[in-house]
Length: 152
Image (cartoon, rainbow, N blue to C red):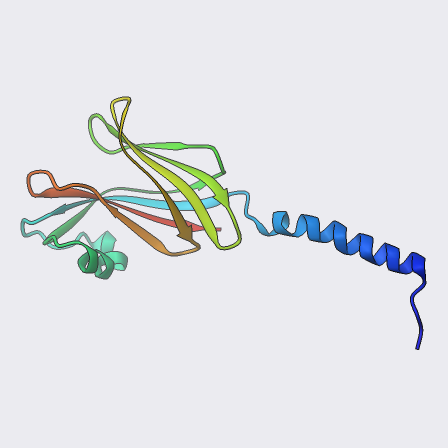
């Protein structure tokens, strides 16, 4: 059986230490595809917007509304710490910022602004390809629902 010489062992250990220090960084995505939808939900009869069929079962299981209509939808490529602003009414905006990306999760901040004032804020973790639904307060029988899905 052949034995390793001290120089070979030192080189092997150095290589292991070098690559293990970079491995987590190599596995983390630098950009994330984020698909977001803004949905209007109502107790009035109206059915489900056909563009929401892929998440209708989840909407019905979580929220108690009769109709769901897609207001806005987009898929963007985002990098950490570069927020995007999504206007969804005359004076309201949703701001989404990726905070951190790991092998399993995307950590994001979501803020709703009315004018320049924050009226809602939360931090969420998204799994690759999974959908997160956030429901807003009901106002005159209607509510806004935000659907987020990330891909990397």
